[in-house]
Amino acid sequence: MKINLKVWRQKDSKDKGHFETYPVEANEHMSFLEMMDVLNEDLLAQKKEPVAFEHDCREGICGACSLVIDGRPHGPQTGTTTCQLHMRHFKSGDTIIVEPWRANAFPVIKDLVVDRSSFDRVIQAGGYISVNTGQAQDGNAIPIEKGLASRSMDAAECIGCGACVAACPNGSAMLFTSAKVSHLGLLPQGKVEHVNRVRGMVAQMDKEGFGNCSNIEACEAECPKEISVVNIARMNRAYIGASIVEE
Image 1: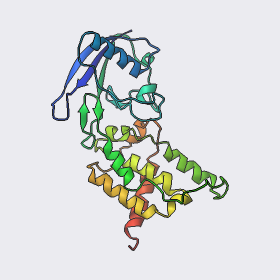
Image 2 (image 1 turned 135 degrees about the horizontal axis):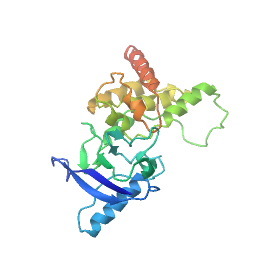
Image 3 (image 1 turned 180 degrees about the vertical axis):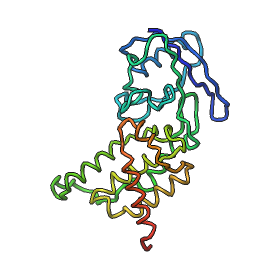
Image 4 (image 1 turned 90 degrees about the vertical axis):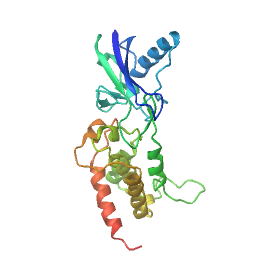
């Protein structure tokens, strides 16, 4: 199948950036990233600069494959990362527009690669628990109600890719942050530091320049792990509660 790729090219964070169009011969069984590999092989054969893009596991786990494809983070398939998107979902002759994440808090480094270290700093502000080291506890030592554990594990599926930010017209990171707050805060092990965690992570999120949630829910629609916006409501309640707790 013949595809025309309209790809965002940007030398560095100071460059204005522009689109360039490339023809690519792809196989319908290729993943989108494999098709990008073919493009780069063609560019290298022509002694041209390859397109910079992120990838790691290529198994839908790491969240590195951050591409906006035809205006949608990770492409047209719901619940799918870019590395799991296959070319059979496109037609021969299609023109596909490929861009980086668009958000002030995710500055472009080069081409399709953005700096997502802001997420790391949000995690560092409270996305952890303090426990005594030593031999692991028995799995049944702390009984946890099944529904509670399931809600925590649903939130823990967040891979920190940033699709929620890219999808949100406000550039909000509240789905990501709330997933991390819910993951730990719902479990007994995480409740000890819950107040400080929600305060710290929300404060850091605001400091990084992410926007506020206005309940558009594009984040949930584009999240490859389908994290629910219920987590945002849970975090907001926790934040209000933490704000009135005495120091």
